[in-house]
Image 1 (tube, rainbow, N blue to C red):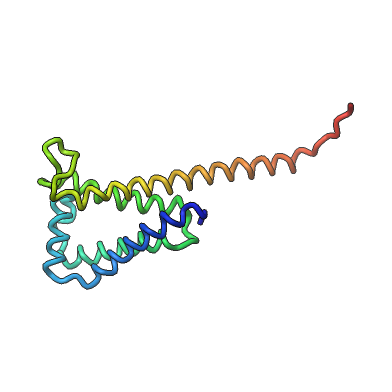
Image 2: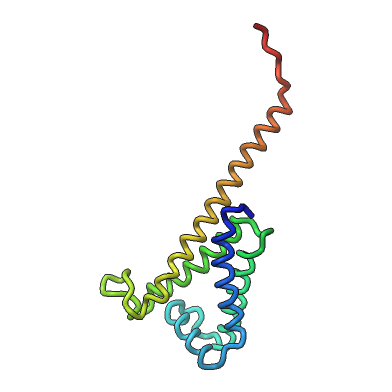
Length: 158
């Protein structure tokens, strides 16, 4: 884990991990609320039992949070997980009636709590791009080292 990623990964990872752990024991009312919100935005969840959805959501959040906190998980993987998770929340925000003002983007009073999840997308995209760019840079360095070993240097005559 690159030292500059630590603040971003620890803060988002701890928050998401805690959220997932708190959903493990969701009561029926909470499970129905979570399921209803998700099924409204993503119809694929409509046929799922609310308690099963709450468990799926809890385990998904735990997995994303743990990936962010685990130093051995590459930034690219952690960033992709965070970007996907955040994008699903932003999608729910945009698709849920009453969460946005008439323009369909700016949050209504009811939507502020979910609209803030756009930051998760930005944080995930930052980790993802930095991870990809780091991989590209290290690949270039590796290629240069291999080229130097393959082609012996010839002393210049002056």
